[in-house]
Image (tube, rainbow over all chains, first blue to last red; front, side):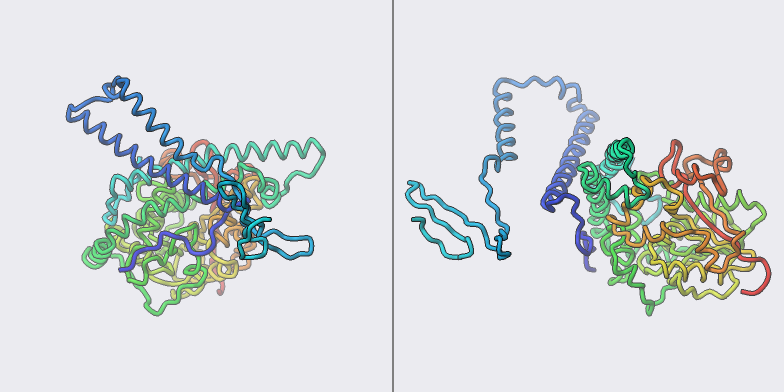
Length: 134
Length: 404
């Protein structure tokens, strides 16, 4: 028996000027859904723990972190925030074709600078060849 | 509270699947209430600003759409709502697929082994119209024919499980509020009318069919649809609930019943899924199979001619963005003219605003029915009012004597 498709046939609507925004929103909502799954399991675990007399909600609320606990938590949040913001500060280059006044289009140039900044390699600009800048 | 289907075709869900379903319900609640309200407030500000400058304000839903389309709140409303619609189906498909063999066996056993009195007649040569099998209507992957290549009922399971999330549990215990509301409307409004043979056209999983058999227990109830998976599910479901209905695979445009064979022909949330030519063919067929003096009743979304511009836009959103390509064409029609064109006498046409029976219950229901309501009441149909949704329906009676 073949499986049902989870994907609707046909083109998908996008509502933002850039469809990537729509994709990001979908990814965000999928992430929220996964978070809901985690929260629901935690909720069930908490209730089970209460019923079995393991620990209560109040004990979770009142649990005092040690200084080591606090430091570990801060480190984890720091890691998580950096992970989420990792592209911040990246230099973005356009990858779309640029139209010239005469109506022709070409890919904009891409530059790579060598470490000692003595050479700039240019790639693109209508050519597939890498050439060193003069 | 996650709604339960209330019959033996219920698929079991994991905790994680329950969580995803619960999340989608809450997401839909958020976008249809909070975000929708913000969008309407934005529209009112924009419209008021136009009025203050003595410029033309939107005259219809298309104008409202043009005004709002570049607003960020419209983009977010639309994108979140679109995603939530997809997520309704994605939330239930894994459970259905995981249990597909078992679901098939259960449906087959219910259909063949339970003595309820209903029947199922499928036509292996039947050609499903392209306007059904070619569109994943309301973003349902595979549409009503999902799973049909394996001869199973998964299309029905997909529909049943997805609308249980979609409707927030506000469609009654068995997703059958529309069927209860319409059958009770007929019983209480036309007290002398005692239909003995009733036909539900475009019945899908029979959720709005069974109430007719329960409200008119002396009637023989038939139901047709074009898609085999939903019909298999419908019959098994009816067997499980102990209600006899005769399901068959037929097209509304070309019913196989004899002339003058039914007292009542009913449809619910059906016409907006048909191209206009198919609607007209169906209405002619409805009249043909009705006995003289019989009633045709269609529950539908309210026509645009009765709605304020903003509500026209709000309901037409589905036509533009929810894979409901025929929605707006139907809602732009003049219902009395459609009935007259099908051969019904003009003076028998009526329409009504009917409250939700499963919410307001028996004691309040009759008093809240408005037959041939005023413009203000008509403008509120199809959207959530203080107590419940007041649904739009229209109908006509076949002339009592004379030829076809």
